[in-house]
Image 1 (cartoon, rainbow, N blue to C red):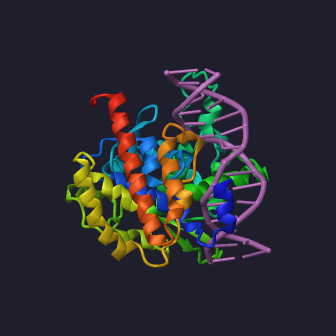
Image 2 (image 1 turned 135 degrees about the vertical axis):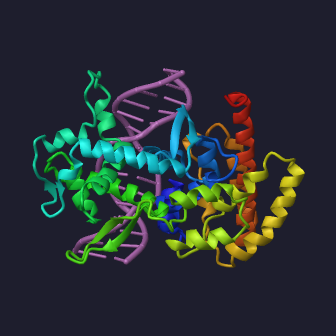
Image 3 (image 1 turned 135 degrees about the horizontal axis):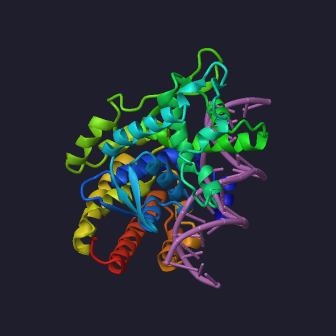
Length: 359
DNA sequence: ATATCCCGCCAGGAG
DNA sequence: CTCCTGGCGGGATAT
């Protein structure tokens, strides 16, 4: 409700800042660093300042590419960008086996259909699975992601529009509703892939319509394969440099404080006093790189209550209750920043407690 | 107008 | 039952 309203009323609301693309970038930056092993969905949602639901989107897509691996309920393991190459290799093999190479871009359909195009979707239905929930898996974001990738890897198409991809991955169905839904999902996938620079959006010379080109492991990618491995070894980066580089790419306005909060988390194992001094330092940095006098108010929505956050309502109420005290936007945001960071630490500590030592 | 795609409802599943 | 997952598509934004 509050969020819905703010979208309509708040003149500072910016859809771009909420995009999956930006979220993915932040997510990646938050976890692609030394010492990251396990990822808790709650912590992720909290640290990134988004509702849990969005984390599922990111995580499902990343997992289908090998970057993450589900370890347990609410818990993922970070595999890193280095795992992408292998995952793609497997996907390509699977795709060829499933005749994804028979996709014909010109006809935007499958040629040489020895198998019904529909059966292509049924990735490895060899066994006698009690396909009860198979229906769900069939329509999952993860599978769609993999099939989308296979389309690029196996067929010889260089440019693919989401409409065509949807058509190809849709089992012959002419249902316009299914089509619309499929395209919606593909936009989601395309956004995270774009932020990872696995694909690139460009204008199709022929149709003049937007389409995507596969970039994959072609190097120069910020995270990309070879470079990705280096990123991990490179010590923690200097504040600021990364923000201006990546986030601004698709976001004209500056990044959200949520991202900075993530950076602030790195030394959470130290004492609170140390954290405070870190925060002090960051205050200057934020002022320089992120917060200007016209910093968009991304925090009010960031802190909006989510029913899934009920376990730590106190902190949210706290931050909400105090925000109005500050007239100055920057200060207000800063407060939110600290409040949220504190919440994250609190949550992680609690998690660590109940999860026990690493297994 | 068309292309995008955020947002959160709510059904299904796990514990 | 409670809480975790994540399909799905209404309708607001971006171009």
